[in-house]
Amino acid sequence: MPQVEVPSRYRVPTQGEALIDVEGGTVRECIEAVERRYPGFQELILDRHGDLNRYVKLFLNGEQLPRDAIDAPLAASDRLQVLASAAGG
Image (cartoon, rainbow, N blue to C red; front, side):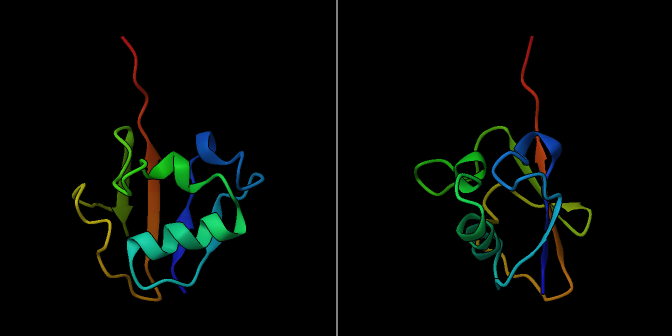
């Protein structure tokens, strides 16, 4: 079962959970699985069009995914890491 690693900035919807086991065969399905369990999570990750939010980066087993890889397949042993970029000036 894939795991989603949630950064501390996005753990309010997940009630503090940092590592969540989910069922899903793609990146999007895993994000949706977290959303079903913890409503409010998906809106932090995806925009209203279903694309990756501007300030979010995704990593699969430590390797950064391209922004358009939201429907990339995942294996049961994969770990999807969400990185919340900080904006500022």
